[in-house]
Length: 173
Image (tube, rainbow, N blue to C red; front, top):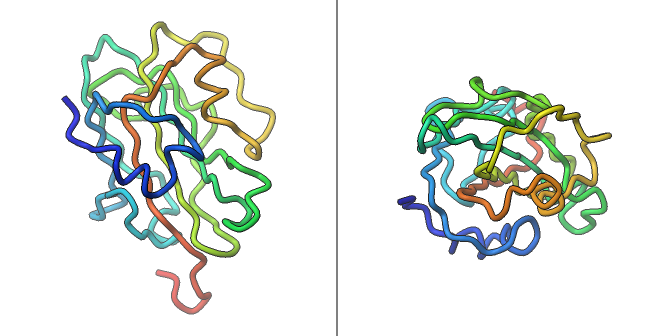
């Protein structure tokens, strides 16, 4: 049984803005280098330029979909592009990582233009293999709930998020 609680997701408004309330049932760990993602932690965009290491529990016979979005695009006070899709991987076997799945939308690191943005990872268990899958028309205006409904994914089985804000030019890496 997953140990992550949904409480930080509710406090961070991930539940509500991105997904509905759910009970975590799969453990998912996310690391940018040595930095482990804990809900609400701060990650500099330069630290997250490359895809994170994501490991999920579960049986290898189960398949999962991983979605990463920014619900605060282009700014938290005016999120008119909500949600910005940063990564989409389908048909990922349990007990593996995204490299074992099918990348539908390649990873795009955080690039918050203004304000503090939330970057949300949502994991769904698939009932069947997703076939003949085409990428969304664009990254803007992605909707995690609609995507899950359109592909019969149900509620998430795990989720996590971090915060990020624009770095001053002289402070990058």
